Structures are given as C-alpha cells and as structure tokens.
Length: 199
Image (cartoon, rainbow, N blue to C red; front, side, top):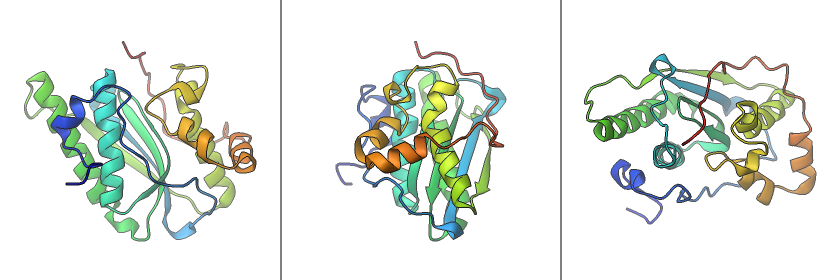
C-alpha cells in the first residue's frame, strides 16, 4: 500500500484537515466521450457523514477510489448527506463499480462507528454525461461553489471537503476566472438536500 492509500478505519481516525493528496491538474480540456457529473444522496437524506472525521473519511475514499477506477476528478464537494463530483474517464463503463465500491466501503465504516451493521446508508446516484463545453464549465463552477449554495461557508475555498481551494491555488488565473464567472444558476442538477452545519 502506498503512502497515499488508506483504509476506511484509518480514514476515520485522521484529523479533519488530513485529506489525501489530489494529484490532478485543473481541467483545461473537455473530453466529451467520458465527462460526467455525478450526484449521490444518502438514504432518506440522513446526515450519516455529520462530523469532520466522517467527511474526511468519505472525501479520502472518494479520491482514492477515483484513482483506482481511473477517474480523473476535476471538481468535487462532499457533504453530510450527499456529494457531487465532475470527472472524466476513458472507460466510463466502470462508473457503476466505482460508485458501488465507494458506497459499500463508506457504509460499512459509518455503520461500524454507529454499531448499526447492515443499516442502509446510500440511496442512489445520478449521472449526467456532459456533451457541451459550456455545460462542463457551468458544472465546474457549480460543484466548486456548492458549499456556498448550501449556506455552509461564505467563501467556497474555506470548506475543507471540496476542491474549490485546490482549484483556486492551482488553476491559471485566466481559467479560474473563466470557470468561476460562468453562469450556473440555470443548471438542472439534483440538489434539494438540506445540509446542516458541521458541529
């Protein structure tokens, strides 16, 4: 196991700021065949990932499994009862296995923490293939700004379980301004989740 690989039990014990490295560069390209936006929600929209350590667990496993299943994540935001990510893959057929693995591993981990083996944690996920550059850029903006849209922070870069701060630090100024200035208020995105603040 490399230094970047962690188990679910190790991820739970990490401090809130101990997110694993995200070794991708900002997306300057658009690979139409394999670009998707994914949204997944918990069962009955329950806040199973309602602490810093649980959000870190979910985030770290999302990033680790994305690499294992050869998904290049371009933006992601993780919350107590749902997550979004924008990613690309040369073989998008493996999306289902990737999501199943992520949901299984995280459900087992939080059920162990709560001593509730077999409890249903995840409800389902929705995927949208992106076939237009404008749609891709609008969704990059949307995912990066999602913590603000949910009222958790005033500035997205201050939310730890989102790619916004990383994107601000590593994207070229021109590309950053293009994405963050792109309108995203008319998007059809499943996101009617009420997200309580993290204690």
